[in-house]
Structures are given as structure tokens and as C-alpha cells.
Image (cartoon, rainbow, N blue to C red; front, side, top):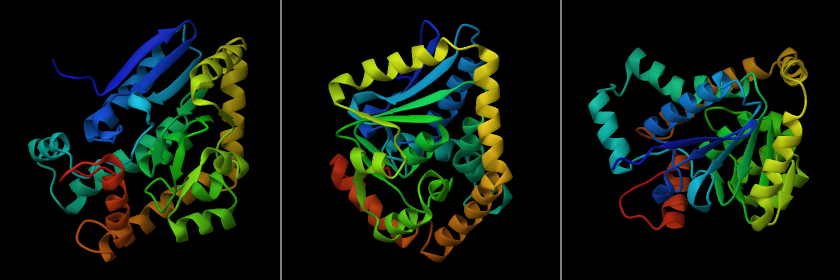
Length: 269
């Protein structure tokens, strides 16, 4: 039986979307990202749903981008995406910028429920959600990622500190600097997150839609979307100048994640 990359279920007015690659701590393969986009689309079209909660299976939110699991390598070969040129750019952009911007602008409120590791691409997905709740044991790793919302997620000086140092922060620090809205004991996280989502769902659809739209517009007037797109180009420069295919920082942090997951010959950061 083939395992579904993303699970979708509805609990009253709340859609639960679950990243489902626990073997790799929910590393983001292309198939997972396609499935996540489809699940979000389903939630938007699902009339009873008013709030979407995103979580990870197996006790981790996401270890980030999949840089070499057997499944991802096979999928890359099957799709025959070239290593350069316009087709490579469009594919890379879709999975690392366009999807994330699209999810940020979903027409219904979204909540990231983070436990365990939330690394690079995991930060990207969480950042695209409207609200972030975390377990007390959650660990976050920021950096110059493709969807570079970090200077907007937290104070620019703190963003520089974390990107320069490449260190994990715990849930309490993530809350202190403003990335995480609320921190709960792991045993309480799901209950409290769903309770919040249900309270939000008690509001009218128009209010929720217009409030989210107005706040996102306020950011965009300040240059949010344009800045994120501009930083995507900076990431491409980083990737090209840091070595073939991966930057020095990516190699170093790939080794960090490899140690975290205890995998041999398979990397997902």
C-alpha cells in the first residue's frame, strides 16, 4: 500500500492537513508539496471548513527540503527536470516560492501546529500560515531560505543574528521574538490548537476573509511580496556561488539534519 504524502480530514469546521513522511521527519519532497497544495485547495473548496490546521506526523513538523531520499531521487529522474535552464528555474520556483506565497494568501485562516523539528523549509510552511502554535519541545532553524519571510516574521536584527549563526531556537525563544503565537506542553498542543481553531470558526466567513486580506495587504503595501521575491534571487545566487548545487551553508546544515535523523546516505534539510 502506497503511503499518502499528506493526509486530509475534517473535524466540524476545521480541516486537519498532516504532512505524512514521518520516516524522514516530513522532509518536503516534490510529491509532498504537490499533495500539500492539493490539500489546501480541497480545504478552500470544502464548504463546511472555515479554518485549516497544518501539522506533521510522527512528532515533527518538517525537517525541511528533501535533498536526496530514494523516493525524491526517483521522482526527479522520472520527471526529467534538467539541472539548468528555464525549465529548471520554473520547477524550482514553483516548489520553493510560488506555492508558499500562494499558501500565505489562502482565503481561509490557517494555523501551523508545530512540534519537534521545524527546519528551513519547515519554517517556510509555518511562516506562510496565519498563526503558529508550538509545543514546548519544538526546535526551529531559520536561514536564508527560498521563501525569505524571516525579516518580516521577526525583528530584522534578530533575523540577522539567527541567519549569521545558524543555530536552533526553542519554542520559548521563538515565542519571545514573535514567530510563534503560543507555546503549550506537547500533551496539550493538539487540544489547545483545535480549541482555538474552533473559536475562530465561530466567526462569520466574511469577517475572517476580510480581516486576513486587510492584514496581508498592509504587509504588501510595505513591500512584503516584492521583498520575498527579491530575496529568492539572492538565494539563487547563494546556491550558485556556494558550490555545485548546494551552498556551503546548505552542506553544513544538511550534515546537521543527517545527524538529527540518523539516516545513512539520505539527506533532507
